[in-house]
View (tube, one colour):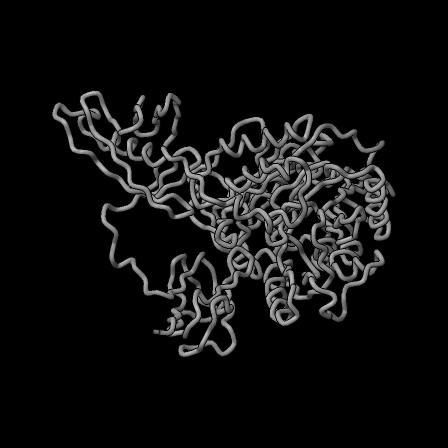
Length: 617
């Protein structure tokens, strides 16, 4: 029996494993980088060991340090979570060689499937060795790891070499392995997967299907179980292929076999030899704890009987600190408050007041709803997200709500091109017109020294706000009266420093207002309070290229220097932020007049990177 378990991971998955260990009575050990010294998973573990440094390559990807941490802390088992070293056969061997229990598949199974190129060969699918125009579009893909990192769609042969280099760099940074391969890219397909669970006694369970077609940057955003609309015959063939993959590798533990479904056929993609981010939807539908089953299997216990019967439908949405309207740019800062209404499951690695930094994935939390039908699950999840308090950096919350309510998704007709088709409409600004007024009235009440009214008529007061993240500016007016605060066109039913009730056109609306410095959250609307007069010093020269996010400059375009002629859209430099590379392009056609950064330099949002001057006419 396992008595103490080290989680070789961080964030949400570490907290998830720790939760099950507490229920089983297993003592827990966390590891942490310097950036994660006060992270939630560190605070929740029984013990924690520091991995000196901040970058993943120095810390969570150092298998030797993780094994030493387990031994030093007295752990007798290691759970890898997902990402980092979870699909690294050498790490699994190092854990076993140290006399520790490995909560995962045998190293040989990881070796057979962790490299997507070898996995395809094992399943009879060969990647492209040479790419011609007839093969386009193609997908460049990292051989190791997952999560959409090291993946690029190429539609033009001229850009293939550049995308290969970018994918290699991103894969090496995220997984410590820069191997990539190329495969055909099938347009209009659905991403469908099968959860498998196998013990060491020859039993293999298939635990239903999941649909993970809503993706950005080839990383899943919304997942559900079971996959809707699959004909029974196709589902049976998916199960058979998943079992074949598990038996071909003598698999033990939890794993996922992924397919692209197009034209009524299933095409094998890969097998992830680990737990998946989206495992909670399977847990909800089958009423099981996959982490607990992983631990029991690692202890040698058999899977008794058959899989439980599925029940209902479950949908999961990943809440990211990012701005979907601006190239999914990751965001950083303090998460002041995260509160989701009851009736849904919340898996997170953050608590109120925690800092979201630049070193790791920008996922804040996963929100999961389970209901008897798909329609009910979608309604429950979208309602919970719409009513959630997410105070801090910009997030994809509004995108998630609109995605779940989109007619195409609601009808189950989505595919992996969903966001390519609908991103503009899903991110179009739709601010609450009364949110700025509610913010101003709450602020006025909080500042009032006279109980919110005066004996003499007062001149209108004005306040300016910018809605985030779209940047639209709003000016609102209100007055202090004998009866309290007033505004034209609405009736102020109530206004205090945190609660405002307004009535307009006979409809009463309630607003909860929270303020953190200049940032104000009014229900689901985020605002920044602006000074009365703009700061002239904030103006930038035309053609200025500003950092859209915090990150590290990893590359500058070959030969780029002041005086270089560039065209609008040309890549100038690449930023790495939250384990993803982001291409920064020329805003206009002209001449590079200044370059203010170099490889290895860290930048903050809004930092001046370069200036491109347009030719004078």
